[in-house]
Length: 231
Image 1 (cartoon, rainbow, N blue to C red):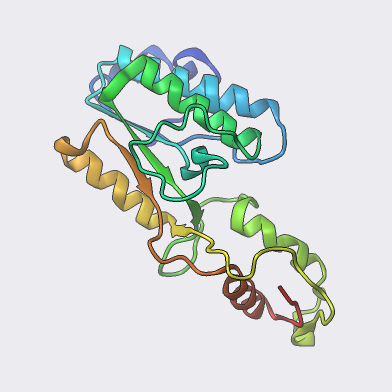
Image 2 (tube, rainbow, N blue to C red):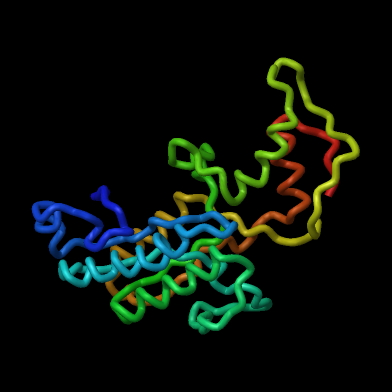
């Protein structure tokens, strides 16, 4: 049952009646600030907020706890990264990644192996229709990357394809971009909820066969009605 509260506040600012209704509930914590640029909300929401939710879950004697983190807690580490690997000392690319590492640390400190941690890669819209599931749309990650191109498009969609010949984007054209549909992440979370034997672990929710950068840019821009961009 979705519960409206503010993770920045102890016990999320919930009323005594709501707290009583939640005793023994299975808690899934997925609130977070996803900006990559420095923002005080990383500390307030991702770190302290996760600690607040974990403490609340402990105090209501929850039946289970899942913390939604990110696979990018692995930071600058390369190669095969196991779910059992210690990421606490990894060098992060940005403040967001660092905050998610510290959030995992807080959850483990409070709940230990009672908590399960799910680490999605780059979450995109649902597999069937691409619906991202929020209004307004959160323009971060995959979606935020392409908003710059959208600003270059004519306001009148009836003008046909927009030719941006001569435009180049920076990046390794053959790098794999790991995207996972939001409904796949939800299925993984529900599988942990339904299987008590899976609880307490750390799980990478990633795509075993993600698109390469060149294909991702080309396919997305074609869908947007943009041609001429080179990688």
